[in-house]
Each structure stands twice: as structure tokens, then as C-alpha cells.
Image 1 (spheres, rainbow, N blue to C red):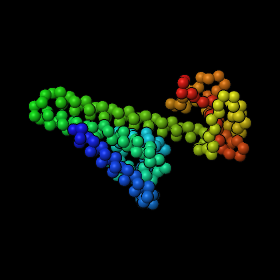
Image 2 (cartoon, one colour; image 1 turned 180 degrees about the horizontal axis):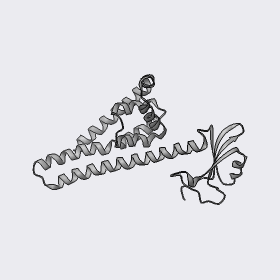
Image 3 (spheres, helix red, strand yellow; image 1 turned 45 degrees about the vertical axis):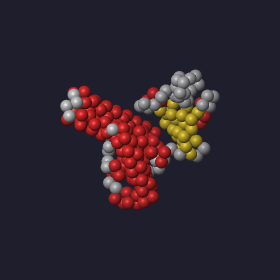
Image 4 (cartoon, one colour; image 1 turned 135 degrees about the vertical axis):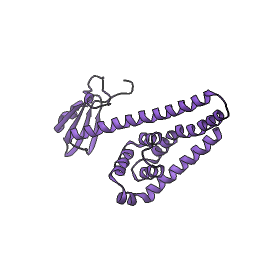
Length: 219
């Protein structure tokens, strides 16, 4: 099964990269003309989320393999994010096919119940990973859409204020202020002088989103 797994993984990854390249080279016009709203929404999702989107659509397929690859190629997603997400995301399914297939053969030969248990366990783990990952991405998408609605749409410039720079946020005109605690899944900040607020408005003639305080990895 290890040899089969290796061949299948390499072949699947190469095939996905070819589809990505075809989408980037030739697919934009075709998808723009014929894609449904559902496909367009799917393309926006994978384009924004890069690595995680590429990983999740492999764990829980949302569209045919070639469509996913070409759609990713049309979006601004970076090749390295697509390749990394695909390389990891295809592992569970290929492993399930290779090793569960071997277990099925052994079980049919009377190899014992342990092979059947391994098959069931592999399926449960694969489905569990996919469903959890997909739920995480949906929560992230919902939080982003809710935040955009609250602040009135996209901005031109995003500014992250470090220590001692929090007063710059006070210069924003017509501000909409959103505490970090009210942004689902967003990390707070516990360092003195970091207010922990997102301030959106106009500064120097541009629409800006100012992060008044930042989260640190050591927190």
C-alpha cells in the first residue's frame, strides 16, 4: 500500500497543478462567461482563503476535482498556497484508498475483525477532519461578512498600530469603532496601551481600517 499511496499522491498533485495552470492561463474568460453564482461564490472563497481553502476543499470536496483546480487558477491565490493546501489535503483520502483497500482485501481473506475496524476508523477520521475544517472556514467567512456589513464595506488602507501609536486612531474622521471582543474568533490584546479596537473611517482622504492595538504571539 505504501507504493500505491506514493504513486497516487504524486499523480494527484501533478494533475491538480496542471489544472491550476490551465485555469490561470485560459480559464478566466470561460468561467466569467459561463459560471453560475454558486461557482463565482466558491471562487471568491478559495481566492480569499488561499492555503486553508485549498486544504479544506480536498478534505470535503465541494466541486469536481478539475473545477476546483481551474477555479483556483483563475483567482489571485498564490501557487505555493494552492500546492501546499492540496499536498496536505489529499493525503487522508489517498491513504484511505490505499490502506483501507488493503484492509478490505485482508478482511475478505478472513484476516480478522481488526481490518474492518481500521477501515471504519479511517473513514470516521477523514470525515471528522473535513467537517471540522469546513465548519471553521464557514465561521470565518460569516464573521468577515458580518464585520464588512458593520463597517460599511472594504477599505483602501489597513494600519496596525504598535506600542505608543494608539493616538493615531483618534485622528480618524467619522469613525466606526468595533472592539476586538465583538469580532468572532479575533484575538484580543492584553498589553498596556493597546486599546483593542478596530477604527474605520477616513484619514488623509483615504478610507482606512486602523487596528488600535495588536495581539502578540506570546500572548
